[in-house]
Image 1: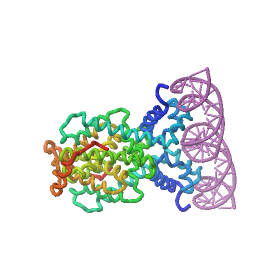
Image 2: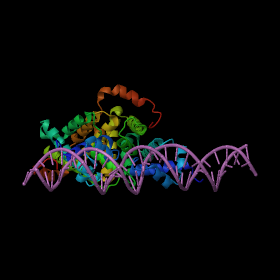
Image 3: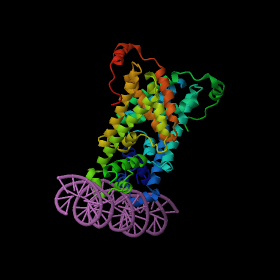
Image 4: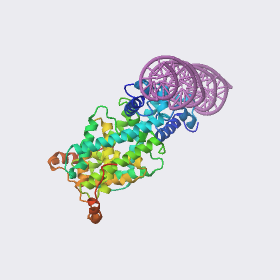
Length: 207
Length: 207
DNA sequence: CAAACTCGATACCGATCGGTACCGTCTCCC
DNA sequence: GGGAGACGGTACCGATCGGTATCGAGTTTG
């Protein structure tokens, strides 16, 4: 077998789920498109929900690795890296198969907050916010803990807007807003603790 | 009949669609919950898609009327009204049945951009952006045409974030970002045309 | 009072949903 | 060469999908 059935199921399902939505894609479609037999599917995955979780988990890791590589690839000084996130997003938005954030989409589709899929999606966003936090801290922002969720809100806003308008422009729009946000000097009140954080060795990137 | 079947179908469908998603709610559920007979449903609506469009259209009008009333209800000077939008959102986010923006949700669920539901949703967002534009123009912002889509991005970002985090806090987060954005003075280059726009009588609110 | 109309209930349609069971084949490894 | 697994194909399951047809009771209207 050239490519294992399990691998084909995961990649096929990821494409279909992202393009059309999880609920919209039946197991039948995945089997037909991947060429995997019905029994083989249930040998590898206990249920469709199980497949969904594994697909999202894989996408989570790959997406974050992509973002980190993209930001690092611009080869900018640390101070400019937080805003570079929006340049990376712009590239993503321009792809003709772009259909928003798979995790936002999943959280909206899976109304039940307790579902496994919903929680994987929520966890993904937390991880990305953590990455933004380290970018801001490395850039010397004393208020990184406050700004990171604000940048995350801009990221999500840009993604949703890009889906709505069908163009990559919302990335530069969000970057423009972020510039205005970062132009404000951080509140000097928490400088002492902020400097302590800034000097702390930042071990990893996003996690 | 106390309340007409058509009305019951619309209100029941709107609640269920918003709470669980359009695709997740079958016609059967709507019939059972509204107490309307199957035949009566198809006497009033050509199809489920038809019902979806009418539900969204009604919600569009009511949502925009709510936002306008909320902003006007704060009784603020025109200069402070654009930011008051986020205060209104905060109230909305705090409701325990809050599950995001029905139109964003619809656009994400209905992957097909050409579907009627998707277009109603897109139109709604355009209308709201238009309202933000008039609020900004009335506030004397020369750059209202540029800022309005930026505020809209913040609104959508706040909504998605509120769904994700399950708290109303993203409304104040977005307001904070908007304050930083509006603190910037508009580019004086287009002042002449801007003043002309500012003096133009603004006939309506959102449209 | 009777015609006209709206209504809820029910049976039914073909299609698809997620999931199980079984079968024959192919490949890998000892 | 010969098991042992992994594989694809297919038949089948009960449940549900959106949608149609029919029927009888209740209400409105002339």
